[in-house]
Length: 351
Ligand code: 1CP
Image (cartoon, rainbow, N blue to C red; front, side, top):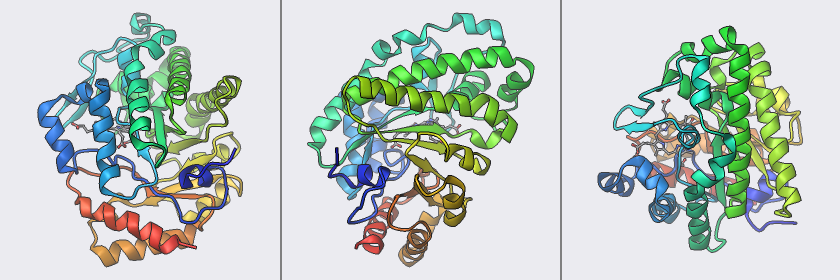
């Protein structure tokens, strides 16, 4: 089943006329029209209101010739669906007023099985966005990886070291596995629901890979990443929804790349600290790579951005490649720099 969309074709290793490009956090505070919406509604109200989530998902897509829309939501809707309170504090980010403090707190979490129902607003937002896009470009669905989400549930907010969350891995390995398994079960159901709603590619954000040692990664992250990919692909096939391409983004995890090259993920997204040639060597020839311009390169002038994009494409090549940043946009960035970035990818990769 071939797709007309560059993003899906590249994910599957098929030929493309131009390298597809999208940008992590392409919807967000760097866009004045997003900030305008945020004066009217709280972050999670936007997520929970399909019309608003669709509207802000469409904002970057209406401005720039992007090759994908990513549904506007957050990785922390899963802990919310399991019963935890999460607030979005302006200028600070997500905050849990009552984070998990000890393994006995796991008993307070709700069951994984109900997340599809609780998060049906995300499915509704995807349906509305798919309808609005009328097959112009595909919609990406996503979830936070179990370790990354677990770390927020324990730390209660962003952390420089993740030391409280990591202390669980060393002191409470059994409880950690129980929590990671619950998050995995919830993520599988939630991702399948996103595909049923019309998502055409799924990305798993392991944004906290960089805090793990290779040993901790192999024990507490990799088995769950594998489960998510294998189970989602199997269920999607059983439901005759086709073959869904899946992306894993192990931020800061150079040491994870060769192991991820052995999994069923179709696309491996790399941050800006990895040379394209090394990433290719580590993941092998049969994976699509995604990334990896340093987001701060968008502070350069037009010539500076273009020069780096050209070099990046030369490094990754024109097939089995999706252009993106190595991480998300920052709120103080100029929307014009995204236009320059997207146009440069298409210009330097036309064939
Ligand atoms: O356009 C898009 O990319 C879609 C929307 C999206 C996605 C994919 C948002 C909106 N969040 C996410 C994923 C997400 N959320 C990740 C994984 C990607 C990454 O590594 O950045 C993470 C770690 C979060 C958690 C989170 N949510 C943070 C980071 C906090 C920290 O630890 O430093 C923040 C600041 C948020 C809030 C948030 N999520 C999204 C937006 C636009 C915002 C800004 C909040 C606001 O409007 O007030």
